[in-house]
Length: 210
Image (cartoon, rainbow, N blue to C red; front, side, top):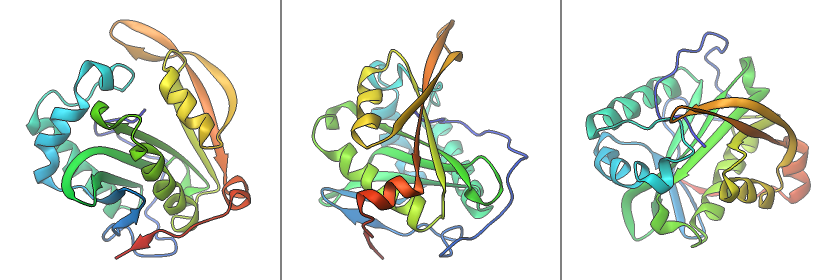
């Protein structure tokens, strides 16, 4: 659901909306989840949780080493500083260990349209961790970054990911045929969207930050 590698982008420009998040991401707390800035020290735990077969099956190929995750974390910090992307580590109130990520990146100047993705260690599936983290990420995207249209792409075979997006209120807009290359196959993807007006209609909630 999320790209865990640096990407070159030439269609976005540095921008600060609402807060100075591009200088430092706030800490977001809600339910049983804490979202915070990625740290280089998160690389070992992210490597452990996000490279298992179950998790990586429908992701763009994740880094294949701890060093690779360190490079990803450095890239995420550079993209955040440029105002192009916010990438949060998923942690828990009782533990600062990174168990996943949420990423929101602009696909046009000004965050009119953005894409989000997520990856969570399989031991935390079905625990409410994803739902709590998604609520924080969505609130940040729409209420702080000023996103108007938020897109997500999920492999059509990824039943868990598609059900999660539907449960969040995302609208299925289409099928992107053979748009995702993975393990020698070209897979169909489902395009999901959430608009700012959808989020507001559901009742915006500002997470606890510091």
